Image (cartoon, rainbow, N blue to C red; front, side):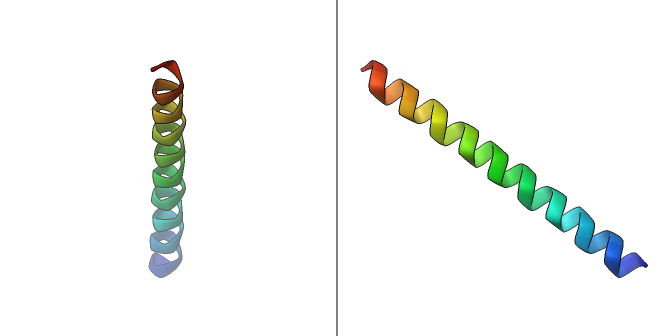
Length: 35
């Protein structure tokens, strides 16, 4: 059970990281287009 919750927590962190990375990429693209 502990292993499963650890895996679930890791997946959440990975998804959060992907989301933040995507958000940063979009923001960089918008800044690039404005200049």
